Image 1 (tube, rainbow, N blue to C red):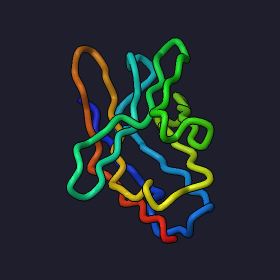
Image 2 (cartoon, one colour; image 1 turned 45 degrees about the vertical axis):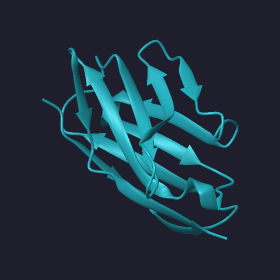
Image 3 (tube, rainbow, N blue to C red; image 1 turned 180 degrees about the vertical axis):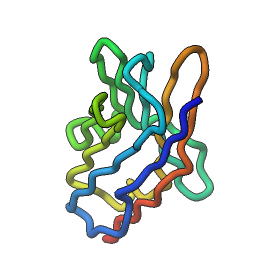
Length: 115
């Protein structure tokens, strides 16, 4: 079993940057894929970015060119670098790991972007 803890959220002005971290209690080396999702108030949870074991990435159109997903297997940590933040990026951000046929979620970290 894998437990995930996100950190790095906070309040930032539009145009600013944040780096989210998601640290796993166990190894993520063999994880098939890792993800970042977000959920804004009154909206459904949406996929922000994915990173497969082979290194392929994909991003939601709304964050392409601004966000970058990465992983450090040695530190069992997944990152989401967020640049040029916009007020519409305000949401709770969650990481997810798919491993051995299971999906594991973190508890979420709040990101608030002021205009």
